[in-house]
Amino acid sequence: MKFALKALAHYAESVRANGLRGTLENAAALMDDLRFDRIHGTETAQDVSLDALAVRGRNKHLGIGYTPTRVRAFHKLMAHLKPPLGGVFVDFGCGKGRILCAAAAYPFRRIVGIEFAPELAAICRTNVTVYSRSANPSADIVIIEGDAAEYRFTGDEEVIFLFNPFRPAVMAVVLGNLHRSLRVRHRVVQLIVSNPAGLAPVLAKDALLRKTDEYAYGSSRFFIYSNAPS
Ligand SMILES: C[S@@+](CC[C@H](N)C(=O)[O-])C[C@H]1O[C@@H](n2cnc3c(N)ncnc32)[C@H](O)[C@@H]1O
Image 1 (cartoon, helix red, strand yellow):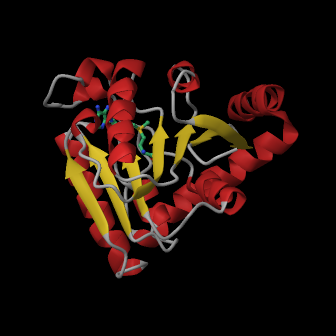
Image 2: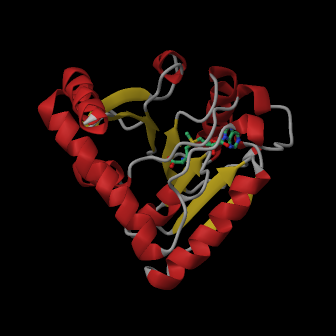
């Protein structure tokens, strides 16, 4: 009885915050996440606080811990956006690699994940190996253990994904690096920020990117920025 009342209160709160449709979408997304790990033998669900991790480098205090993107919301977003799929996809702050695996369902030339917490990068490597065996052995997925601020753009990145991984100071460095890369090799990029929180004001001031779209599925909210001509 106590459990039923608690569950009811939880759903009433969710309907208040997300509407009935959003609540149903969240429930479907949660089921898909559980199914994702069960089918592929991965472990992507458990949140991890950065306090618990030995992060090397200068930016630990500017980082946000691991919480995965809902895999169903990601696929809905891709169907909505129809992004350029021939280029390279990069997830800045890839955590345990759920989105790297999900991105392998699309014909990206290469999928890159950058993660500065060695323990998460290790889990990510295992997840990608296990996932590739069960789902998509031909996907080219590269995991870089390091700080997003130190990522050297190779000039072919076209879809850049971030799920609110760090504070604006790190975002500003990443954007500066992206600008330099675009000056060397001009291309149209789409930068997708999930639940952007404090990053939206930095992006609003960016000289090259403008917000072109916004998409929500359940409580997952994605802001899309691009340098494509308007
Ligand atoms: C909210 S999680 C997102 C995980 C994954 N992108 C997803 O959507 O499922 C953010 C991740 O960014 C990582 N992170 C935070 N600051 C970072 C930095 N400066 N460089 C690389 N990774 C960072 C955290 O360790 C965490 O795993």
